[in-house]
Image 1 (cartoon, helix red, strand yellow):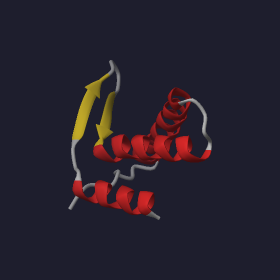
Image 2 (cartoon, rainbow, N blue to C red):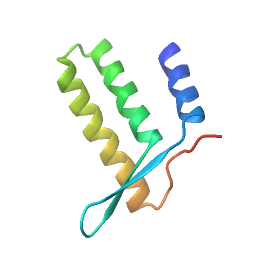
Image 3 (cartoon, rainbow, N blue to C red):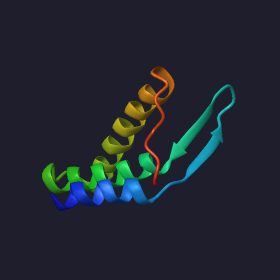
Image 4 (cartoon, rainbow, N blue to C red):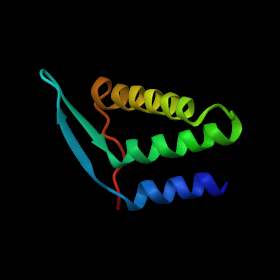
Length: 82
């Protein structure tokens, strides 16, 4: 419960976005993605107990794929702070 509460508070309070030009597309990295990667990696480390690098890679790939699907595929913007 504490991790979920911390996640919701962090996503609501921290807000930034970077644009990274990658040739034919500009990738956008938001605070939502950064916070989600950190929190998912932490949760994976607690319950999966794999090597921290493996947890971070799994979290990074899964969050970025899902964020890209919602942002570019469905046109739904990622959450922003208050």
